[in-house]
Amino acid sequence: MFHIIQADFYRLFRSKGFWITEILFITTLLLGVFYGVIGNVGVHTDTKALEKLGDNGGWTGFEAITKTSDNFSNTIIFTIILVVLLIGIDLTQKLYKNSITSGISRTEFYLSKFFVLASLIVLQLILTYSSFIPATLINGMGTAPKHFLSNFLITIGVQFICTLAWVSLISFVLYATNSIIAAIFTYFVGASLLGLPTAFYPDIDWLKYLNMQFYFDMVSKQDMVFKTITIALLITLLFAFSGLQVFKRKDL
Picture (cartoon, rainbow, N blue to C red):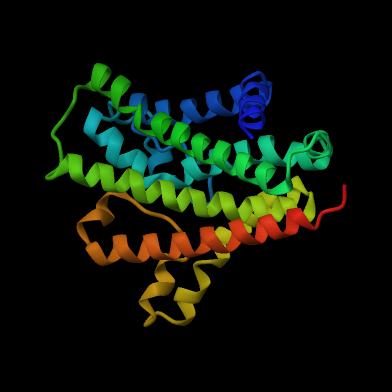
């Protein structure tokens, strides 16, 4: 299993697709640092921020933390691209056959992929909030929000779980369909559709957290933290287990 993990990282880091993805991700972050613009390629686009391109001097260090947190969909979509690069190519080209026929069990193979994906989420979150460094160097550190450190650590933890939920869902779609297009379609359409239940049943508070989004400002409300974590963990467990069952039944 360790050798599969090692091979996945080696293949990924030597992939042009990986580096192109990360360069584009960093570029969207730097738009905020230099111009105060939210470079969003996810489901929601902050058009007001785009209209202000060049109108202000960019973010301070602490503003970079809060603003990139508010733009969490960016982190999710660039993580999903890495999911496609790691699992999608394996499945569409049936590269997994080499590992399975060499004696690795399907469960070991699946869990090794899951570990690599969890590691990639950590990498994406580090990149997301590393915007603090250039923002501080260029525009100063700024003023820290109240209870910043504890709230920031909670934000990172909850966002990790939310991203893991999306990764589990997208991975399940890939294992079930072998289609990269279906996986990308699932995120963009799914993220929009998950907001519909709230519109029809506004009194059911739990439905507000189905979109698996979490921002820095939400930390101050403990019920939001608890409900977001609960929904995200349930979705992670459901689709991670379902993905494993689908992969176990997949023909070589």
